[in-house]
Length: 451
Image (cartoon, rainbow, N blue to C red):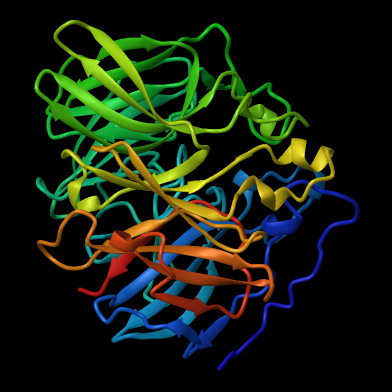
């Protein structure tokens, strides 16, 4: 039963980047119950699959609109006892003066939190995705937060690298009580774009990017590629101390798969873009990078002060995820979305190519021990989103579980929630939950299990 339909129509005259194809915003909040399913939803999946992303609510200047700046909208499917109970999409409604809260949504301490970097605190949502309000961890968060937290299940700590351009960079630790236990300012100047970081059992790994904040940059995104700034990795002891820096060839760090300690070395698996990466180029009519992202491994030798780079897989891919019960520990498997022209939207539009083709129709499973890759392909014109792994149960093998992703169905003009078996990755989906509307291309999400 669908209570409302989205009424989505074209909102552009001419070709406006990030407002057409798979990026085009939906215009209604929708609630639908008893969703149709092809296949069978595993009965072990009891919870909510949520994903955040930009969905412009109103635009004073559509020409200047950029994907990263749209109002946040969280899309969710409630699974219980083998059924798909509901689909909802709801705008995140921040207070005046706060940014969009459009990048990530996580569960922590029994709360659902929408995240944005370099500005606002998290925003709490209720179980039906309505905005409750800003959340400052019981009054203990002072300042900005991050879009990418790292939860260490072994220590019951939530870690964040937070920053406010031209002001500060901090390492923030939230303890098991849900309060900020430590906030340490880091000696990083020059206002770099610090989108993600890595965490091991003993170390915090900071990615200092050549992309830096520039208030004089042309709109809409005030970040530029800074030829004068080196790309470097900082390794900080988790309990505090001096940060050690290791320089790399110019590169843009995108997203962390995972990291772990290996003797006197720190191993980091991460997706990167080749230089130059034009952050301001998101809006200047040029491509965002000189090539697509790929997965690589850094082995940081703390004893000898060296970094060795391994090219794990040159297949274009982004949004890497893993079984998050292994965050900070050695992992074997990773999952990502294949992407041929990720973030090249302006070039695609200039070439009169459909902009949603910056995402492709495939998900990737990496076996990092065997250096083996499996690819699950969908319909030719489908567009996949970030894959999220859900364990089959406590104590299950690392890849014993399910991979969930929103996938656009070009035949229906709407999206599906696709559930794959992680151990039979290339097989037909275990279940395909048919949503009543399109989920625009977006960013990150989480499986939030029932308590």
